[in-house]
Every structure is written in structure tokens, then in C-alpha cells.
Length: 554
Image (tube, rainbow, N blue to C red; front, side, top):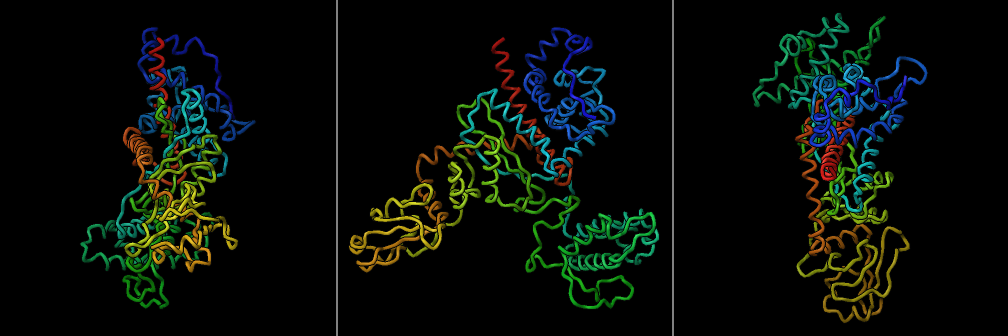
């Protein structure tokens, strides 16, 4: 049952138990004082956000929500295990002082912590924001308290890996089959005992049989594994549930086996002719050839079913946006989103801007690297009142030497209008094409174009001295051309230098906070852990700044 934290201190509080000298040290030279003064009030004010996680009229009162949230934040701040965090909560006076918890009340069992996290993740998946709402509230509190300017922000992505084994393709097959065999032995001993002899020998009696395969045998053994996967999937496809037991087709390990078959193998129209069920001969399946047949980037990568494959490797990637105004005392991370490693940064720009706008934190200028700066993103950001500052995305068109391209025309920054052509002529008329509002046109003075010495090199159409010479382009093309011209200026280069600062934030997240390789797996747990680590990062910056201000005032 939900119960808010009692704000009234008792005689046994740490303010009484600790000496004045120790209290002064905690307040002046320790992170715990800043956390208690700055972060704890935000946690207490947002306890109601977590009310839906508890029964409203039944059950034992919950552990104080603010203290539990603070425990989770400090756990990520110091990159601790659950066991170490719970020990610090129970025996470390600094943790107790930071969370304003009495020593005799400073106890949370691991099961309580686990259940609280699971409920938060389930609520987020259902659309009820819990820890995401807390992240936003912490950001608002920091911006208000420090008077930060959010008009300039920067955006980047960083690759992370969950607690998953890094497997070769052969290892992926063998581990998936062996895991299914172990679960089958536990839940259906009779079905397990009836498996073909070869399955027992390769994946049970000698688990890891293929682990030391030389490269020359890899293809043959992979074909054997593919045949074994097909046999197991086909063998239990129509299995009916015995009384009191789960159906084999409903077992998670069987579903992973079937997913592996669908993603990594080609099923051919042949009838199996291998009577002993031992070799790959005659089995209507073969492993895909990655050079010819596409294996999806979202395919099974290992022990984490939600991890995907991208150009940086297996795992996930995190989109990170933070303030970057030179006048800010500290910078705060304003947006965090976790996505598959296969996702392209090109598709992240506009969702990030929309999220920032929904939190009243939309920037006027967003600095990003090349992958975010495709023409359509520049146009869509401008429509939202945001100047997307990034190098132009895509290759410059290749033309014959001396020919003009669209980049040679002087476009407005939004790509909608042309100021002048390469020879300095301004259009006499321009606007949207009647056929499609997504394309624009500019008409030049036909007589002046007739006197031009470069008519055969111009991309504009019509140059007979009578018909208006017309240039047509799409908004993304115009925005990209304007960006290529703009990025050559000193003003662009000077302003763009601020973007590189986000690399330090990514490094800070991965090293002191352990964000590069997490202790959890699965998309819900990864998203929750990443968000708490960035809450901890923001609070740590905030408390450091608060300590300086507090000491200066003292």
C-alpha cells in the first residue's frame, strides 16, 4: 500500500547522532550534503508519480519511495552492485545522511529493490511514466536552480552493451540448442531422453563440442547445427501440453530456437532422407550465406534477445542531448533514449526535438554530427523553429568539370528560396511547384540567361532566349546545398566547436558510471538502468556545483 515519506525528523535522526563536526564536513566537503539539499527534495516532491506501482487500499505500507529512488540513483552514481548498494544504505552514514534515513530504518531487502524496478519497467512499457518522469523533473529542477540556458544544445549517440555473451555465429547456434536441451531436460524429462543420440552427444554430454572448431571445420559444423535446429523445431512443433506441464512450443527457449531458424537459415523444398537423425544430409535446411543472403540486423545476437547489430557492434545505442551554452555554470543532459544498435542517427533528430519541446526544453540551435544532418532533418527542424547545425549528410554530386550543380546556387538557410545563381543573377519569380508542394522552382530572366557564357553547364532548364529559365529542387536538396555553402564559413566552424564537448559526456557516462557495459540485459532493464545512470550523472554535476556555491557563501 502506498505511503508518502514522513517529513518529520525524530530524536534518533543523524542530525542528532552525528557530531556537529561530522555534520559540518558532510555539508561542506562531501557529496552527501549537496545530494541532501538539492536532489532529495526533488525525490520527495515526486513520490506521487510512483503511487500506481502500489495497491491503493490493501497490503503492508511500502518502503519510503524517495529513499528507494535515492538508493537506486546512488547505486548507479557509484556503479555498485545491488549487494554493495544495500550494504552502503544500511551501514554507511554518508548514504543515510544524503537520503535522510535513520540508521535503524536503513534497510531494504534485495527482493524489494528488484520488485520495485520490475514494476517501474512494466509501467513504462504500458505508457505510465515513472523513472522517465523523474528524469525530466530532475532536469527541470537543475535548470531552474542553476539558471541554465537551454537555447543551445548538442546531440550524439553512444554504443553500449548489455550483460550478454559475445558469440561467434557457430557459438550462437550451439548455445541456443544447448539452452533448449537443458530446459527440456528440466521440464520434460521423457521428451529429453527420447532426443536423437547425436543431439545428446553434441550439446549435452559434451557441451561446448564445437567451441574449439578450427576455421576449416566451421562451415561443416555450422551446417550440422542448422540441421539440428530444424530437427528440434520440427520435432516439437505440434506438441500438446501434458497435464500440469507447459507446452514445448510455448517455452521461451523453444521460441528462441525457432527465431534462430527463421533468421539464420534457409528452408528448402526437399524431404529429409537422413533416417538416424544424426547428420545434415538430406535435411531441408542450410545456414544463410551472409555474403549473398541478408541476415537482419535485428536477428538474435546472443543471450540478450533484444540486442541488435550495428556498425559499432552488438548491443544498443543511446541518444544523448545536453545543454552547451558557454555561459552555463554546468551542463545538464536533457534527453535520453535507448534504441537498437542498428538504428540510424538520421531518424533520431526529429523525435529528440519533439521530446524536448514536450518538456519545454526545446533549443533554438541543435549541434549534431554529420549523420543527423540530412536535408529533410534540416527542413523539419527549421519548421519547429530550430537551427540544426551539422555538416551536410551525403556525397556531393559528381559532375563533369566546369558544370554547375545545385550547390553553386545561393540558397536561403531553409532551402526554400534562391538568392542568386552562380553568375550572380537573382530570380524574377520563385515559389512552390503546382504539382507538388514538396518541390520549389525559381525562374530567371530569359534575356539575361541568353547572354550567359555558361548555358550548357547550368542545371536550369530552358535557355532559348524566350522561355523563362527554370530551376526546380526539393526542400531537402535546397537545405543540403545551403548547408554545404554555410559549413565553409568561419562562423559555422567557430560555432560548431561546441559539439565536441558531448564526447566528454559520453566518456563520463561510460567510465565512472559504468555505462558502457551494463549488468542487466533485455530492453526494459537496459532502458531503466541507462536513465538512472544519467539521473545520477546530472545530480552529481548539480551537487558539485552546489558544494562550490555553498562553500563560497560560508
